Length: 151
Image (cartoon, rainbow, N blue to C red; front, side, top):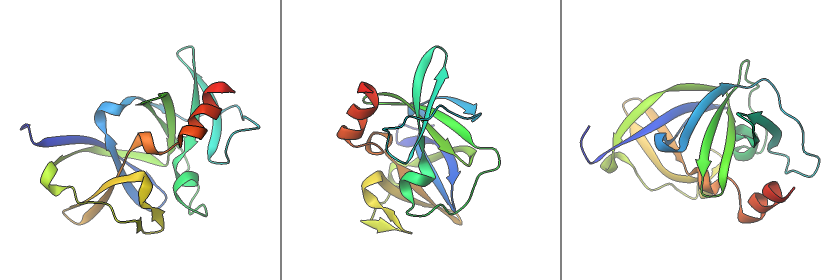
């Protein structure tokens, strides 16, 4: 791997393949359900206890798409480190590790395939696929982050 290469975890949520920085992912666990939080935003599935830590679970599909496009059969949770702590990303499945060069990353448009660009840092055409690169720190607004950490 050269200094200009970047590594990502590729996962599917709805019809798209998304990438997040591999360094943000701490663990991948099977989703066995969560405890609902009544005051949480609708895209927060609830909380799970993982290694004695309470982790909010963000349903990626519910966050990114206005309407649910599919129901995963065996969802997984990517435990990710963000600027405000650990959050779990509920995804349909994890595909693979993807290595790209910085030159392969293109600026994300304001909207792509119905997904608001505010959550994306780049798009990456790669072979026959187009990957959407998510910024885990943008998936929750500062107010949403405060709401989850305070209650």
